[in-house]
Length: 449
Image (cartoon, rainbow, N blue to C red; front, side, top):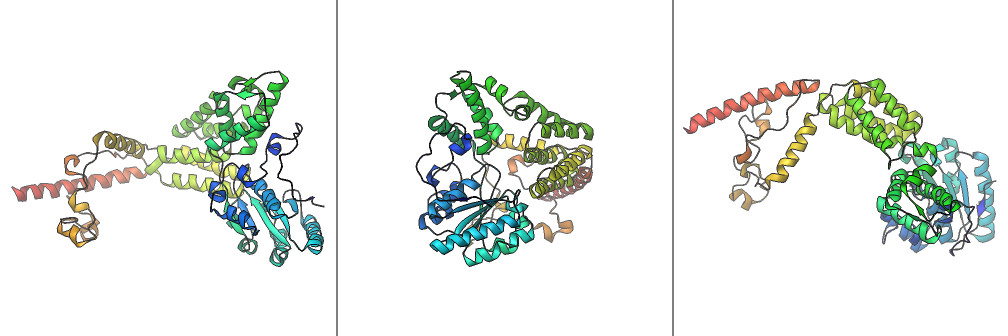
């Protein structure tokens, strides 16, 4: 039968060194929650729900370790409701029925609903999710589902329509730093941690508070066993679990493997690219991080030589969000192989950096009058928009000879398409348009002379 937990006291818990640090540091009030300011800040939706004592069913959607379980427990405490936790991974219809019986007994005795928290609700199938519906509608349950997957795809529309969806975000660098401070000040006393070691922990956490506290717990525990007062970067790397240590963002190995993956893709070697991707996964790298890097590779190294590469990379990231591991990793692998064998171009990347550098050094130039917008009569009288040629009204939808840069830099040229893939056709078109521009400008110059 699922555990039924009575509302907890908001007093600080008794110190229990056998309890995981993440549990010992779990917030007792919403003011202790680190992160989620968009939901818990003044006037924000969840804070209003707490302050008005109006519980409602909801879906908490966000990555691991951002406080979904904590918020559900705090709701039960704030509203004085019993708390029933069900894991969709370990439970089934039997546990749901037992929760219903417990909630009915509580309703009969007190007239109050029971808060039922379903962790990883997306793991329940349609019939299991449907089992909650009548009890949500009757008011027997205040339903709180937690999911790392997009609820639009993974939660039944009927249950979704009866629940508010709140999006939780990964903790920022500063929020994770604040969490370390709280742990050292309130629980893990007598041990300090160097700035470099902090950065390693924060990088490894990747926005996950639970992962951060578990790593900190291991490191400080071993430091105390050795009567050490300070945890530095070297000691931290030695004490972290091997699967985490092998892919330490604070260590050289992390950057070396990312560099190897990127350069293998750029070098058109699909076997090497797959090898380094699998090495990163085996070392504990979050597939989402790899997916983000693959999108960057598509934009930087393939670009307009094959725009399908960017599309495929984005689709791979989306597929991973929908399927998770290990199925979603295959989509990322597919994108890696495609990018490795695709035609390469860094022309847009080079042009973008060149223009950024030019603009930074050049200063501000006024927009030419014919390119300015003229929404008012006064602007038109001042000459805004005057002389502008609407390209769609001209042959080939191209205003030959028109100038779109400030006149002093009208001859500047940055984007140089390659002769590979689609950029070959782009290059040919740009050459044709340049010829039309040159001819039109010669005619205009001759007409003025």
